[in-house]
Image (cartoon, rainbow, N blue to C red):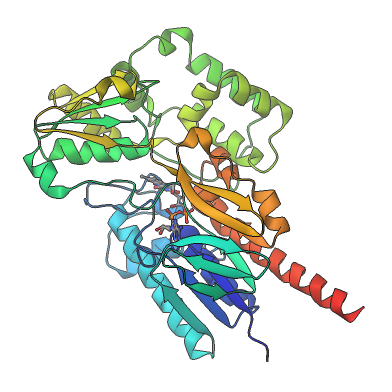
Length: 413
Ligand SMILES: Cc1cc2nc3c(=O)[nH]c(=O)nc-3n(C[C@H](O)[C@H](O)[C@H](O)COP(=O)(O)OP(=O)(O)OC[C@H]3O[C@@H](n4cnc5c(N)ncnc54)[C@H](O)[C@@H]3O)c2cc1C
């Protein structure tokens, strides 16, 4: 039997969920995962403090496309007391990634499959010779290739723990999820922290974030009307702290945030003209509701502001870069993103600022290279990333199988 070899570049959420789907498809008998950080550990979701919670509840974090409660069952098996709607530490999720991979690996390898993990970063892919080229120049042949490089350059937080112990002040660039995580960590270590971003806005606060399976579907027009009412001019004029206080106060009762989530979720594959127009006209308003942060973290942020440990400013990063004694400067969101450039038959992987990044997933797939996870920029419109990623992986694996059947039929003709 001819060996069919799948190369997965990146062993984070998308990489591991693709690994599970690939095994289940029965289409491959050899799978190689490339990741310099090791499988599961380099994910954007990894954390160095137990205070860092997942931004999505347990019921939305399954990496098994066919079992949406897989993560919940894992938590229960580990004796972690939670409900499907709870937000748990990211360290628990990363442990789940690593263990789930190992469990599937054992089963696959016992059934005559072969899994290899290459602890190296990938620099390029030659789609003509079908070779993966690692940072140390080694070449690995493949039949199919799936890129799961994630949202940012690996290890988004380049935080030196001893520097944190020593620091008095910190400036964190960004006010979104990564910046919030970092700031909670710094403040909990007693470091006076200032978050700076061009908007000076925190994301919205949600006590719940779920996929609507039953129940009413809100029409886009109703949701947009609600958005206009809820986000009145008066609200928009509030500063970040006042908005946070109001969001915390309303988070248990309002339904309009769910409506926006629901509307975006349903339209993520094919945004309707109305959604496109709204995104163009009010990108900041809509984006504030795409990546909401959890109620627990919102309350912590509010407490740190009240204690005088945290300040949120609207401003330009370059105005805050000058070095000061015992002051840390950390990037909490404006990290470098993976960029893919085509050169002859080689796709080069580099890391660039977001303004320069333009990954054309469709062109890549014409060369038999598929992209999944946060690299696939469609995800920008998605409320529930992980569910989308797992389903997208299933689609990518079946596209690979279709492509292979087409090649086989060509050969036969
Ligand atoms: C701080 C933060 C918090 C988040 N919280 C949530 C959350 O709670 N819920 C949620 O649904 N989403 C969350 N996200 C979004 C999250 O990134 C995705 O849901 C998920 O991690 C995407 O999976 P991925 O596989 O695309 O990326 P990742 O899980 O980040 O995996 C990418 C992997 O690729 C590896 N890699 C990168 N470049 C190379 C290379 N050249 N060669 C080899 N390997 C490489 C990295 O080491 C990493 O292991 C968060 C993102 C961030 C940054």
